[in-house]
Image (cartoon, rainbow, N blue to C red; front, side):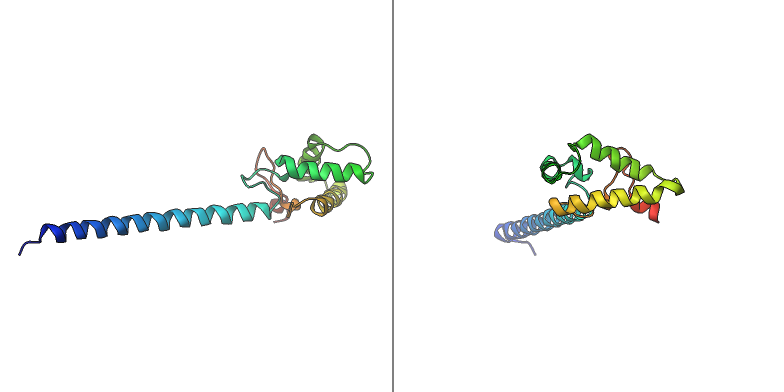
Amino acid sequence: RTCSPWMGRRVQLLVLLAAGLLGLVQSTSSQIDHMELAEYRLAHGQTVDGKPFYDDPVQLQKFVDAHNANGGGGQMNKRQIEGMHEYFLASTDADSSDAVWDGWMQVCTLVEAFTDVKGCMQAPSRETGFRATHLAA
């Protein structure tokens, strides 16, 4: 038994429609994955693209302005924040690590109070991706 040309076109249309819907589902799934990743990063001291929070110029400026306006002891800038963060990540000396950790915790408390940054303590190193949680583990 043979198919009429009309039936053949109908089957082709259904196949194309199914393929299109599958592509839409995969695209939507990919968008959801990217949104979940962005939300995770924003909750862990990162920018949406995975860099440390201080690479976000808007959040950095909010923190610097608030720090300087509240008499934070000198002008703060990105290089200083990054330097403190890298020093914190590298601190392993038992005599100084408590003071370094406490100091960075104070910085993070202020960062989170004055900006939209969350999870400052978990911010990754720009150079290595290393995090303080790696030390704690």
